Length: 359
View 1 (cartoon, rainbow, N blue to C red):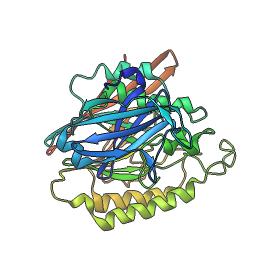
View 2: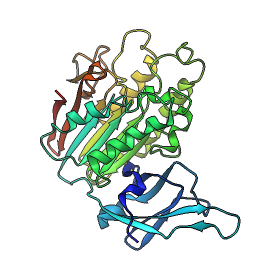
View 3: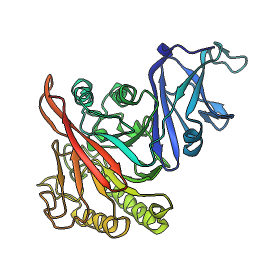
View 4: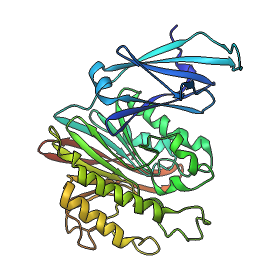
């Protein structure tokens, strides 16, 4: 039976993590979900038991398989009454989606950061992009805060509007995502690797490292009310960076471009009280610059747009060895916001950045 689109709250979002895609879907009713690619079926289950009470469904599939077949079928069984014996449910429904992996030679990236839940202003800028989009990067503070679980909907709403479930997305957490009662549950609604919000990914000839600096002030700051422990989080993350360098996956055959994605441009020393963890962030910059040698760092957080070359405006500690692209312009008040994004064309010769505004 063919599924009607109104069964979805939002169309599937296909996130790239490691060597897999994590397909995240939100439905209107409690449901049991499967995804079929070729002859292989992947289920959202807990050790053999279909998940049905979860608000979103997250299913991991091999990147190579989805890239190969170029389509996937979502099958759903909506529950009437889940019982210990003889549960009642509706007939299975399904919908098939095309999927377009990133091209090998030239990749066009739409980079969004600091949306802060403002779908209208953000899409005003997206609609002014003159060209195709092969990859969507959501780079932090897409939600305004995590004080209401409905705030997470903006993630899927943007993915639906821009990718229609047909193109890959890379997600990076921002500092505002750590604020609110549902912040501790955010990992159930976004892509993670081993439940961590930092990871690597490989999309064709592109290799990427996603980092997460957590909050932007010391853990003891009164704004957080003793609810964060980001210093310990960043300590573990530094060990992860070292393990990536030890494994050298960024040197694998076929990789021609390397990028780092992080909401906070950690190479830049911001004024107090935001000047935290400078020794650690200097080490991160040195480790990444001397070993990975990325083409650029994609960031947001500063609510502005621009490129800082080595020795440029954002290199105020003289530690940069790679360009930093900040694509998160945001000025004005709600209802009269100027919002800017970065539209990046990446190929074997380098990259080109256009900054696009809604106005």
